Length: 147
Image (tube, rainbow, N blue to C red):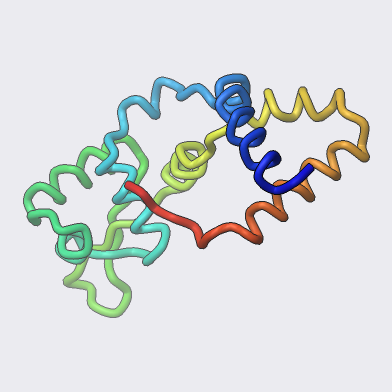
């Protein structure tokens, strides 16, 4: 199959693939706003920050960031802790529940649904599928963040 035909077929198949295997959000994830998820992602990338640093990095006012962080602390997603280098400063950081929530929120496909389908495929087909997707990713553009 030539590249143009393969490209068109893959693009045609992808919506059906997504509809069949996409992960449904659980109730707790509906309660997180895009901004809250952005805070979790940023903390995961940077490490613990003060409320002021988080507000600055995410271009939010300090009172707005403080309120959002307080809600996430109350839900057990973030925790406050003293800065070991300067006890006057308080840092916020992801709890284990926060890390789990972030990992879950970034999953697009249902592991259970894909795993069930893959268990019914021959091992060679599974290997070819993974190799093909890896090759597509390896030759495609750099990862994008369209948010």
